Each structure stands twice: as structure tokens, then as C-alpha cells.
Length: 320
Image 1 (cartoon, rainbow, N blue to C red):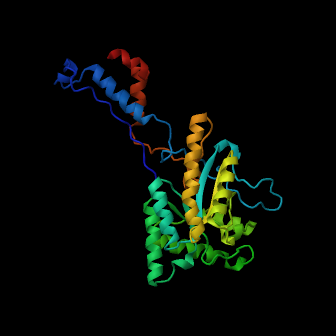
Image 2: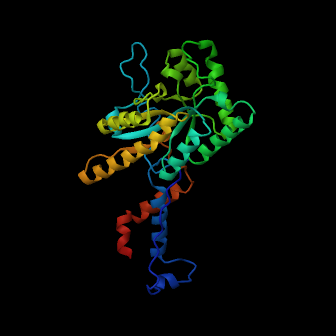
Image 3: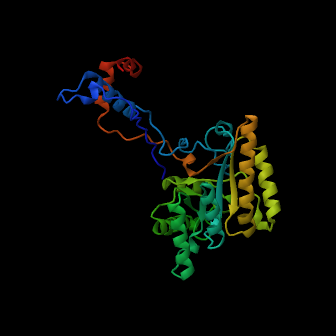
């Protein structure tokens, strides 16, 4: 879902006079051309493994998930220390998709170039009524714009209280999401934040990562837009590590609050730039995925042999 960074090729200015090197028609190119080409090739091939996106990608599970602790657990944050990631914000939306709210949020995120995770309930999209078909189309639009659709069960059940429904609720939601989007959910959010060892094992068997939150305005209780904004911005102002913000895209007040929360992030980052303090980095689902190295091309041994025989790249500058 990310894009690979290209390496820009710098050509000589058009006004530069042709040199014998460029005019040569010999079947055996001059040594300097060979050296330059091989060095350029190796500079591409010898790059260390990078993530598939511009943003750094964390090792699986290293970004804090902020899960409810299990009995005997020492920490509620899976992975490395939260402080290691600096000030960062992951936007998440639960209980959709909603034809009005999700669409408005999508438009706002698209306008700002921000990505989010939408944890959806399968019962909204499992039937073939016109509204269900429209919601499935909406999920496809989310995916094509770079957002992740996560699993929030079929019917929003507390799976640690209704364990007999665990497999059906998880697998059923995954199947309908995969059918609608052609992408099987990578992330799961447990309704009510429920967590138990049976659920952990069930998700691990399916290679699905459970994600919690550490900022919840609880706007579903009836909080108005101003209260949501005040709660979120106060928390972000104090934050020194990652924040996973939980909102509900079917809640009109939360939809309206989102624009003001993102405006605050922009103003806070402008202030941080002026003062030289850490900004709030907007991240997406990739922080939960392992870094992916570029695939081998088969030309790496040739490049290594060329550099070994010709010397370090810095030494080749003298040839020009």
C-alpha cells in the first residue's frame, strides 16, 4: 500500500560540451564509463532494506497497542517503550461504516492527506439491501484511498463474555470485509476493549493484530462537539508519546470535531517548528507491520564484485 521511493538520476546540463567519453562508439566502453555505471548500479542495489512507504515502519507489535492488561501482565502497552516513538497520532474510527459520517470523514482525510483505520461491524455490510451495497462500495473507496479497514466483529459482541461466538464473530466479519474490499483485515479491535487469553490465542492463530486505544472522548455518551475537541486537544497537548485516538464515524459530533482536532495538530506543529520542539507525527496502520526489505534482483553479486574491484564509491570521483 505504500510506494517505493525512486532514486533520481541526475543528468549533465544540456549546455555541457560532448566529451570523447560520450562520443565513443567503441564496442569496449572506456573504463570510466564502466566504472560509473557499475558504481551507480551498486549504489541502488546496496541500499539497506527499507519499508515499503516513506514513513518508517515498525517491527510487528512494536508500536504500543494500548490493550487492556490481562491478569499478571506488567504492562498495558505491547512492544517497546512508548517514548521511543515520540509524539505521534493514529486516527481510528469504530462501529461504521456509516453512509453519512464515514463519507464526511473520508473527504476531510483526503483533503489533508491523512490516513486512518476504520474498525467496522460486519452486520452493516453483510446483506444485499441498497444501503448495504452502498456501504460496501464505501469500504472499497476507503481502501483505494489508502486507509485500512479493520475487524470490529460481526455484531459488536463482547467476545470474552460470549466465547462460543468468538470464531463466528471474527471470521464472519473478516470474510465480508475481504469480499467487499479484496483485502483481508490485518487489525482487530475488540468491542468494549474486551481482552482475555482465549481471544489473544484466537487472533494469534489468524495472524491478526489486536489494537486498543489510549484516548477516548467517549462521545457516544452524548458529548457535544466542543467537549470532544477540548478533551482531544488537551490530551494531545500533554502527549509525549504515541496516541491512538478512538472516535465513532456514525457520531455526528465526532465527525464535526475531527476537522478542529486536525486543525489543532496543524497549529501545534507550526508552533513546534518555530520553537524547535517535537511535532505530532500523524501515522497510519503501517506502524504495526514489520519492515520490508527490497527484494533481491539477482544482480547483487555482480554489484558487490564491481565495487570490490573498483574501490569505494568516493574514490571513483577522481575519475571525473
